[in-house]
Length: 280
Ligand SMILES: [Zn+2]
Image 1 (cartoon, protein in one colour):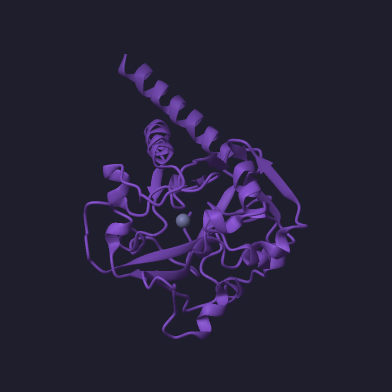
Image 2: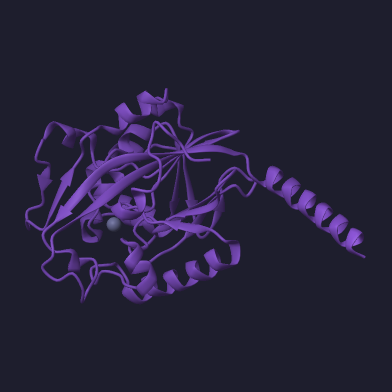
């Protein structure tokens, strides 16, 4: 009886290994430091808590090396900010954007030029995610249709988007999405529609060969605290939709075992190896 049982376990294990090998052709992922944003009042992002408390948000870009090519997720604060040692403060004085090391330099360090990147997507179009988007005009761009219409429509500023960040992408090859998309066709890199923070916000699920599935948050939530407490900023494009998105993604991560990596959470990202090291 017990021998039959252990044989069954061996067979099951073998079957699940075979599935893992087949479904993940992601070789590695580089988590790149893409700037920092400092604020004098964190409660703008966590209504009701951290009132009047200064704080800093990390910012990251993610380069995925798949057997079929390279994909970049988010493009960080603009490289040109590297020339400003004190960063750039917005006119309202609420946030200072810093970029110590340009993204182009971080990519060069791992032997990648912007033109080598075939696939490019941003979680959404705010300035700290689209700062270097123009470098990737030769890539195929993946964008949700409502986000595309807001960025390239007549009033991008109405959505807090900076039109200049996208001017070189007008002629780019674009895959307009209305929902989820399997980038390499093997289930290993999935763009998931996650609207609310902006009209066409999206998250990325990467099946790492050793770590397993990881969901890259974009600004679906800004801190692990926000994920745990279902908290979103009042300035989001649609607050109830943002909350529904958190519920849907919680269901997805529970079902798939994906862990959430929160882009702006410095404390969580301190535990994740940074480029030129990589995660697998
Ligand atoms: Zn944002």
